[in-house]
Length: 264
Image 1 (spheres, rainbow, N blue to C red):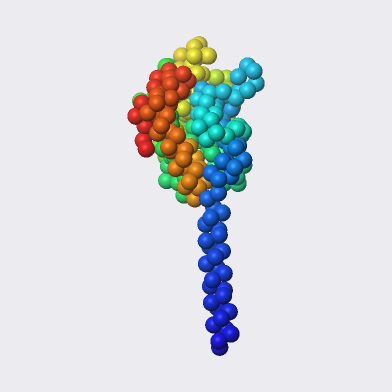
Image 2 (cartoon, rainbow, N blue to C red):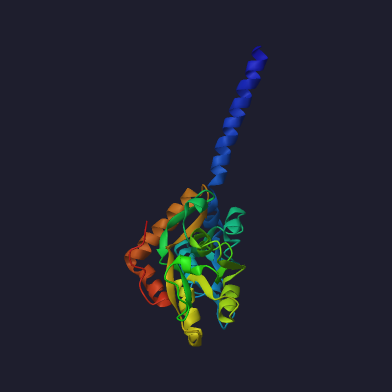
C-alpha cells in the first residue's frame, strides 16, 4: 500500500512538473526572438496597398512596413513570410511565423485559435459594383454573381447576409478575385475598400463604386495562443508608435489618411 501511494505521489509530482514545463515552453517566442535577433513575420503579397510585390520584386505596403517597424523596435532581423488569407493562421499555429501582419481582422472564431494585439491600422470590407448595377440592399444580390477571396473576412461576412440565390464565386487569392471582376467573370466584388480603391484607380473604364458595407474591421497582429510575453511587447511597440505618430504616418503613406483612433 505504501509503495502504491509512493508511486501515485511520484506520478502526481511528475505530471505537475510536466505541466509547469509545458507552460514555460508555451511562452518562449519572445525569448527565442531576442536570443536569435531574428523574427519571422507573415505578410500578404497579393493585397495592395497592405502588401504586394513592387517593380523590384520585393514585398512592400503598409503591412510590410509594419513588420519591419516591429522587428526594428525589437532589435531583430525580419524574415518576411508571404501568406494568403487561407494559410496565414495555420502558418502561425505551426510556427512558420512568429507574428501575422496580414490585414487580419479579429472575430470570436479566430480568437479561439490565436491571440491578437491591439489594432495597428484601419480597414473595412464592402461590396462594390459598376454604377449601372443597382444594389440598395443585400437582398439585391439575388441572382447576381459575386466574387470574393476564400477564407477572407469579407467571405465570412458576405455568407451571413447574401441571399441564397446569390451566386458567390470564391477565389484562392485577392489577385484572382480582382481579375475575375475586372474581366467580367463576376458582376460584383466583395473586398477591402483599399483593394477596391486600387482596382478602381487602375480600371476607371469599369465605373465601379462602393455599394454596401460588410464590416468595419481594423487590422490586428496575430500571435500564437499563449504567447503573452510577445503579445505584450508588440502592444507596447504599437502604443509607443501611436503616440509618436509613426502609426499615423504609415497609414497616411499607404491609405492616404492617418490611422486615427483604433481599438485597443
